Image (cartoon, rainbow over all chains, first blue to last red; front, side):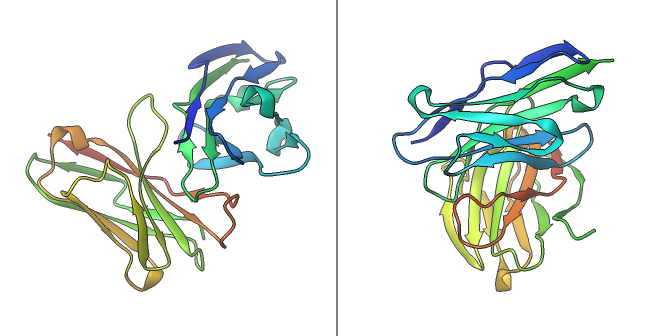
Length: 112
Length: 115
């Protein structure tokens, strides 16, 4: 069975600070990894995904994530956050099936 | 707007009543998913369809829950004899193609409150 753990449930930053959100997964085989974002009042939408190749994945709005297989991790990063990055962030893993498992999410608040 | 749509957006019902939600996926997306999300949690998988075939159901989907996707287009999720524990946001998502890594496109959700 696959599972996802997001370490930080609530993160508060000031604008221009750097961001790193942790995500660890549990699955023994090949994985597909996703970060989704939900801005206030909006739908969940894809931020970035990894399925093969370069373990450093770049997504929308300056976000990136690095897949480290030995650590079963897929941490999300952004060098300088903006107030508009305030949102809920969800890590998800799909271990070879069509059914992703989502983490419980991290609420990010960015103060202007 | 050609995204995933869900109706109604909000539903308040009394315990014991039946409710039905509808999801219209993005046109030509052959996979459709239902999730449940409660406060402070990520989406939890309920069931998914490949075209009109319901291929998998979660153990969360008790016998009071039923989902259909006639003709492989829109889908409905029905909850019979609702309980207060059914109060949650019910999300629908669709996905194109057959690749495992295809992203899911989510709808706005239906918020169910059972009194």
